[in-house]
Length: 138
Image 1 (cartoon, rainbow, N blue to C red):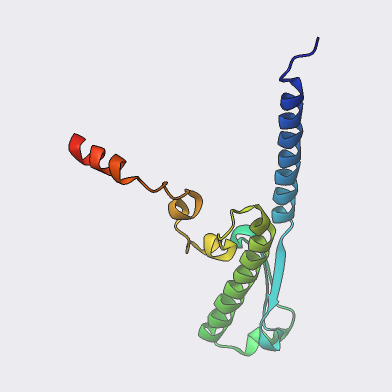
Image 2: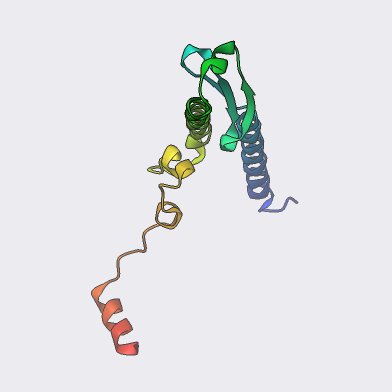
């Protein structure tokens, strides 16, 4: 005799394995993100990964030698920011399919989403009688 719940347990285990495999694939894709931005005149090339981590900075030409320290710093900061933004967009594209409907992945990564309101369902509407009972108890 088989356990009446064994089919349900097998279904839940298969679902768990599938979700775990999808999570591992998402993590692998995030680790592989690598975005390179090259500044005008090829002064500097910056590579950023997931989370905006700067992985590499290269100076493909000698153009940086003709710049003042302030100009070079400005170009470098812009290239870093652009590479980080590109990496964030790629990470958002990887994660977006796993998020609840209506949650903007790019806004989530930039801190522009209130997680509590985005991930918590709306409370069900109270019936008038329930509301009246709650008022009486308080």
